[in-house]
Every structure is written in C-alpha cells, then in structure tokens.
Amino acid sequence: MKFTTSAIIATSVALASATPIDGGAVPKFDGNGVFRVMAIRSGSDIQYANIQAATGGLRINYPKQNSSCSEPDINYASFTLSQDTGDLYLYTANPPLQAYVDRSGMGQGVLQFSTGAQPIGRNQERGPFKIDEDGNLVFAAANGVVGFQACPNALGGGYSVWLAGATNPGGNSNCVGFVAKALKEDPRVKCHYSGMST
Image 1 (cartoon, one colour):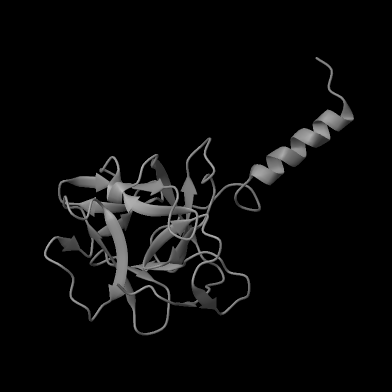
Image 2 (cartoon, one colour):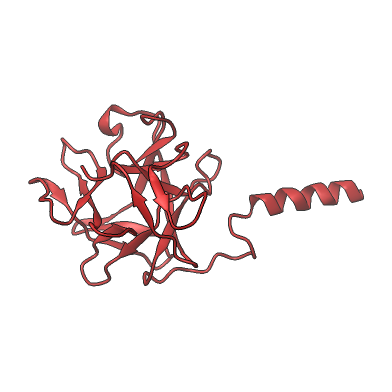
C-alpha cells in the first residue's frame, strides 16, 4: 500500500488534534489534590469536553461558566474530594461549595451545589463520591456505583449534567451517558463561582 507524504501529514495532524492531553497518555488521578473532569463519550460532541460549573450545577459545552479565576481564560471547573467522607467540592475560597444529588422520583438525579452551612432536603445526598480504580469520578451509592449523563439544550446552552439512571431527567430528552475522567490539576487554578449555591 502506498502513502503520499500529504496523506501521512494529514493523518498525523488529525491524530494530534484528537489527543485530549498534551504529551500522550493521561496520568491516572488517585483522588488526592485538585482535579478537573473531562467527559468521555465516543462519537458525541461532548467527547473530551471539560466539565464546567454554572447556574447551580454542572455543564458541558456551556459558552462561559460563571467564574472569576486566578488564571485567565479558564472555562472549566476544578474540584476537591474528601477521601474520608466522599464529599465533593468546587475548588474555591470560602464559603465552600459542596455537591449534592437527589436520586428520588422528584430529583431524578439532579446534581447541584450549596454551601456546607446550608441544609439539604430529605431526599438529597452529599455523597459519597469517589475516584474509581480507572481514575473516573462516580457516585458511590450504597446500592451500587452510579455514573453520569449529559442532557442537551440546557438553559443558556450546552448540556446539563445529571446522575445516570433516569431516562428523561427533569423533562430532558436525548441524554447520553459519559465517563467522567478525573485529571490532576497542575498548576491548581482557584476560581470564584457566581450563582452556584442553590
């Protein structure tokens, strides 16, 4: 089989542009420190997209998250995870912003944030979240591990992020499951997130 120089160059450029992380292989995150989350869903427009924080929850392909960060042009969320309790936080200054979910029939897997001082509702859970053996963020429920799904046409654009399980959470349709790959933040970028506490 004969390959032209231009075909080889075109293929090399395509492969390089498809690589989500500079330098080749993605190092597996062990759960310690600050991390961001990248969506893995082959064949979709959320493939390799960063998770963002906006309008009280998490988004993918949102035009611009509601944040002011220590570095310019940051359009992704950074997180910390308590290894002891499984509590998931946005990496920000005080007051802390902690994740909670509602897997009941009313909540349908909604994922939102509040300050640690705010009480959560009867059917809502703070966690536990964990980084699994493959380096992915998951919700570690007592009845089994739960992943995530992204639903298009979110308010303001992009996709809203929910726990997997409900077919049409919050009345959304055409939702797709994805792997939430945790990637170590180096250097760490601390942001102030507006409008995140529900």
